[in-house]
Image 1: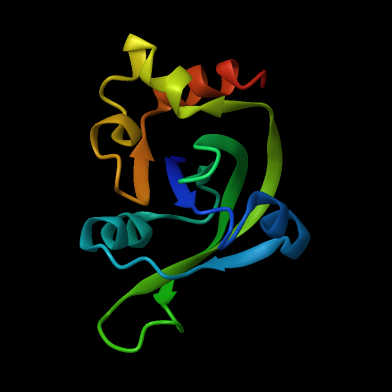
Image 2: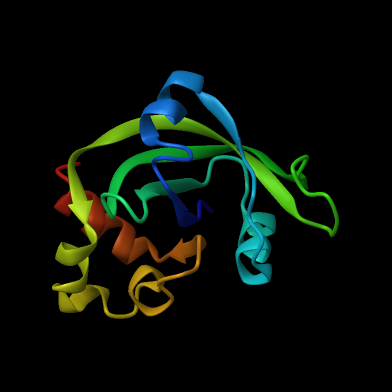
Length: 137
């Protein structure tokens, strides 16, 4: 069974355009234990929304997990992990945080409830609704 996620990146550190250019990229630098557990739960073929945080604050694309959790090479200490993500497709219409917050269907979405969490699950229902908002069929 496929799972769905939302991953955040500050576009001045790593943007959607860089993800597309690099095609497959390790998702490194996660230093929150709950987010780390979400990375560990990811399976090959799972899909994630690529969200620009701080600047833009919008879902801009979809990536696919192509390698499950392994030790994060950027971690100097601790048992931090990363996964490899491959760019799948851009959102035809980026979905802003303001639009998500203004829609009562998303009040339980982790992006709204746990705004600082950089890796979070997305329910299948929310996945479909957000894809529709972004112009995907």
